[in-house]
Image (cartoon, rainbow, N blue to C red; front, side):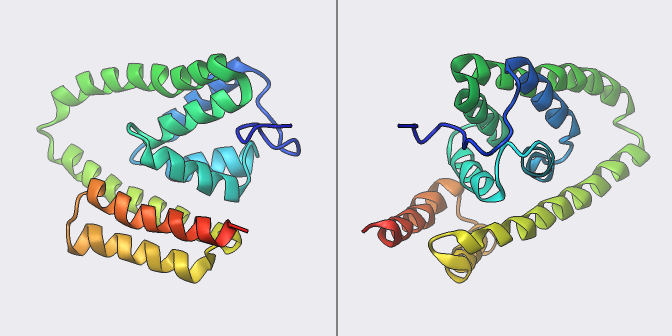
Length: 193
């Protein structure tokens, strides 16, 4: 009997730990200002290692774990396909080349930080990153049609989370146990025989 962490047999899978390393390196190098849009496109649409529904579930788990979400997801997928070797390969892929690039950019930025054009460019990139996140949110909302709670309940939970974060300015460690816990309990009750 397959464990719950085994990859579904109908999905393509990485060829080996090296494939994980290079795939996550490429993914990480594309992720300027937020990687959610890039991760979803690469893992679901391009590589097809996950369905949209599996991506939503795995991304949710990656978000509640400490550390960067996409690094958590890379470790989860690496482990799922190749155990510890895969987890380490995916982790190294997420961090090695971006670390080298960021160190190089930090040295270059130190010399250019006082330029008004550089500050303006960075502010403009923030708007693009917000648009990317909003676009992926809309794409992933479609996947919630198969969620046991259904779209209306999921939309209500998302709205309550947004209100708690934006209007009430509550920290994530307060929101997650309450709303995340409520979502888990409601889903468990729907799935219970």
